[in-house]
Image (cartoon, rainbow, N blue to C red; front, side, top):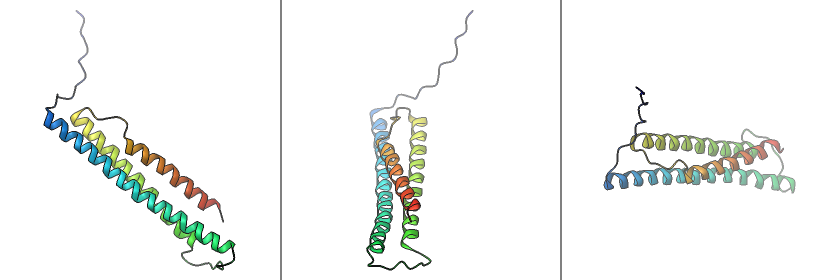
Length: 136
């Protein structure tokens, strides 16, 4: 007698109302991550812009370079770092939320458009951070 292995558990078939509610929840997760992407992008670009503005002013001679506790470069690094940390934390929370929903209800797309966008902006932020760190 040949025994067959037990079948993998499958998600229950959802009625239309529940399926639509799950889809609305998934889209809410996507919108939330995109809001965090916008916030993080603003922090990153603001920090980089502050750095470039004061670098231009200093190299043109319009602004003397005066060392201080919070130089424009330090401020730019802080803004970029906060933007990156915010984006990474939001992306982790997004993945956890989608994984929990996938575990409970089954069908949820494996690839998130907002997640890919967050990844691209993370790369942009890392490049900005490296540029500010390496330039004196």
